[in-house]
Length: 71
Image (cartoon, rainbow, N blue to C red; front, top):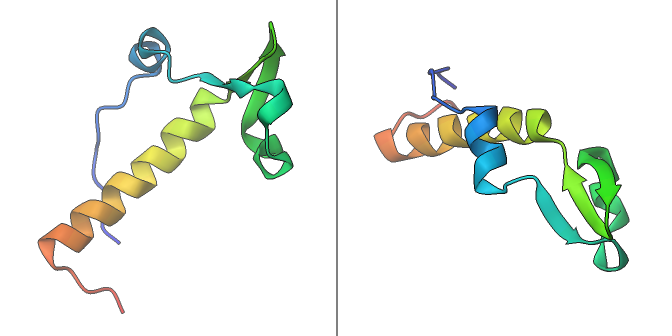
């Protein structure tokens, strides 16, 4: 997989509300590693981890769309 630079800004993610998750009573325990905190009955997701995985997803989609075959 080719690494590229994607302009993902944590402040913009905060402003967009990306960090707001589901109500704490509706959560899936498998999401625990990605939850940063609980506030007023809402899970707050870890934006640093979210940005990391978003970068990986962008690279994968770009490679798939460009027809690069890494097999």
